[in-house]
Length: 188
Image (cartoon, rainbow, N blue to C red; front, side, top):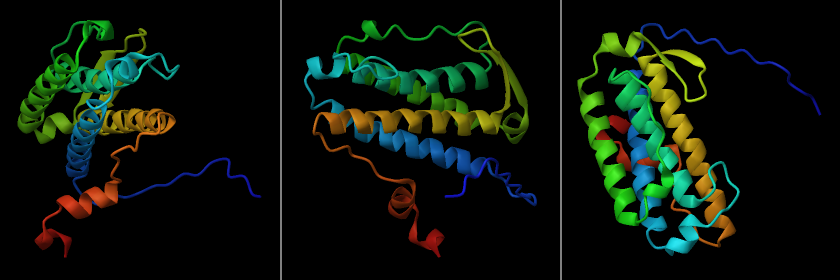
């Protein structure tokens, strides 16, 4: 079996605006977040907060991390609020209603930010300091794309945790999502 050590793919965008892809990914993640919240809301609170030795100890904490990273990347870095962003104390979210309120609040702020972001801001370089002190830098468009991918990684984690509980995840892949949400006149 061959081992590929390094693959480099270079794509000439030829003036194609890729920012629409970043926004579509964010719409997809929001769609998935709501599907997963609906499934999680049917679980017992004990199942949601049980330590499962995941990236964040419980299903609640993994889900709140998905909300938290959106809040930090969009509503602090891109919205240029500056200052030190404080990660959520997951234990303060002691009910599904509290989690839902936080998700709705963050999504409303995200919608306001992304609906007003300019092409110049999408192309601009942003600098920030991560929670661990590392200096970071990225273009606005890349920050949005990174955020969507980060959230999708953790949705994958929720899939595994639900499978371990014999609960069917409500997952819909990217292509299936596009086929369900793209108007017929755009599909060709």
